[in-house]
Length: 553
Image (cartoon, rainbow, N blue to C red; front, side, top):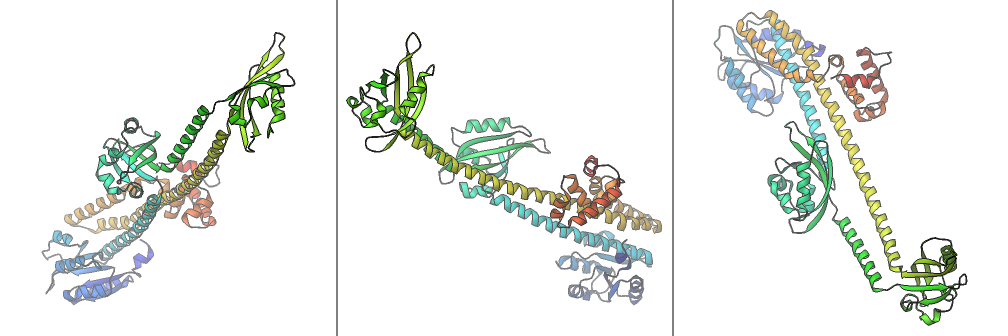
């Protein structure tokens, strides 16, 4: 037992007994060990006194006038301010008491008269230790609840709908609150009505979604896009990405995120409409054909009438003349294209820009096919030109839209990476806190409770008392057994802070990262690591600490 608890210097004991000799004897025993003792001779004064100045433990005589100890204990347990204060009943060996009733009304133990100092101190010390451990656990639980609330806020504020879905149950186990902003249904609506989500999916998309639900496997991820109707009847496009997880029940559960990509789909639709318009323009505007002869001079021997619309020229103005002498070219000249065609087997594709007769800049897509004689010399060039000005404008618009979409994707990716980093830190901290709490409870039990149980066993004579002690010891062992199995034998020698550092080292964190996670200095973390190596008997040995911790179950 720790010194402060053994001496009782930080604990107050309230003794309630109508017999002055009992009050004097118990007071002397407790004050000799440094406890602060308060005494009350009347049972009716107990509740006001406890409410005024709460003690750490109450010693309560059972047989008293006005109100017996059972009634007083029941009153204390009814009050929210006093219900957690341990009550130990006092009874004489020759008194007939109902111990079961004492436990039912909230008592934690019995002390029999005549009093044995060591027994009194041991029982009080044990329950004070348990009370302090309980308070410590309550504080840790409140801290964990705060962290869990923060994690839930992150999930609820995420722009995507985060969910957990059971294909076997055909229903959602969890849906984030974002679903109400997007579809108008609350999370409770979705989880309570398994068919609501699937029923709102577009009929044309249900087939592919059902195939995914039937074929999902543990560890397998998938991505699917489908339309779903909101409460107001509006259709939304969702990009749904999820991964299969096998649960303890052996069921596969899909955990994922559904993003509303309706905006992106609308942009895609506009692009499709632009491409359709472009094709329509190509079909309505007939390309014009050209024949060049008497190379290398390159006079035009024929040009189709559609040149009027494309260049603003009459075919008669061009025939017999060089096109490069009539039209002002912005990019590659016709001379360069003709020269390139002579050295190519097959056809040549090129795009050239020129100024229409109305002064506007146009772009032509040209396919030139050289015609050769028997000796292989080019005698003329047949070509076809298409006005691709509109297509070029559409392509520039498409490039601009793609740049916008890429910027949005990078922005969303950065947000998701920040969220993932935050969640990872929270989960690591929660795991480390859990190990710390378990280590503290286990160490407190072994050092503060178990030794006194052994002392009690040596002093108890009655069979009933031994049975009660056996029951108490068995229950305590069961309480800490789950903590004990989480720590390997070498790790049980570590302090709670060292257990916490060891857990983060096992996850691969550096000293600097551990210090940031635990809000400690790097020097403190370094000292903890040194102590861990010493207690694991690997100090000054070429042994990797993380590998050793990972190998321990």
